[in-house]
Length: 370
Image (cartoon, rainbow, N blue to C red):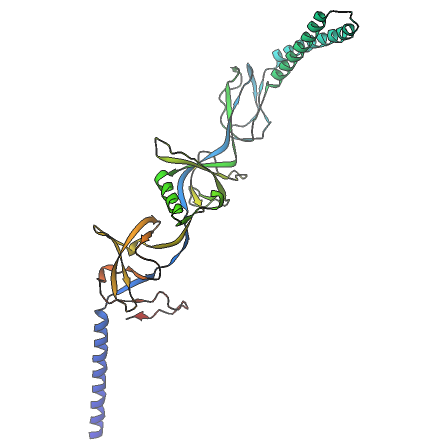
């Protein structure tokens, strides 16, 4: 009986001691704030830029009448695709056929006269004046015949380039004069993507490049990608083939253009897209999340956690924002561990606990540092 009471007493004391130890440990953890951290890495980072852009045909060519005449036929579908050299309009031919026949008859007569005069002149049977007059008449009628032939060809109005047509400007049956606009053809392959670069942004990148902190692509040839209005990325890759060397006075922007293969005519002229200019690389860049930075009247700072898990307020200088991150100009050099969540709980000199970001990636929870 006494032995049983003694064993029961020892068991109760053990439970009490265990309870006290657990409570002390829990209480200690409760006083140490839990935060999330991230290691700072210094590395080369691609830095693309994106801009709102407008698609445009690489060539927008007006189709105009080159002679006066009545439109007899329209031979294309408005908004449809035409090939270079394909006939689009037929103008009346009668008067130009008559003019051609008249010019041809005059030319043949002048040619016969020239062929008659030439041997006579060699035989000194006619004068230099007669010879020159016959030659002049021959050359004049030859040129007139060529002009009449050209005018007759102009009765067939053909597409100057391959592309999509706009609506007709003059309907069948109307009289048009030389240079009257009939329609327009937009060549959509290749396709131009026109956009503007902010002058301060371009100058800032050039400054970083001069300082050795940014590398431009080889020969300054940028790769281009575009996002369509439905949010999807266009599958083809283009190039930035033009960046203006001057700033627009009215807007403070720099004109630029990308060129894309558009053989499947997925993109239409006038369509809005977003163009991505790819090629710039930040060298030895320190980039940290924006939520790791606190900005006050006295400047920006981050909370660095040392090897003893003690938080230290560290001033930083922000260079620019990149998406949801900041590019730092100074303050961190890489290798530091900063707080990205829970900064308000970690005052300067406070001991913190966190999940080790470098713990095993085997799916098991990381051990919390204390």
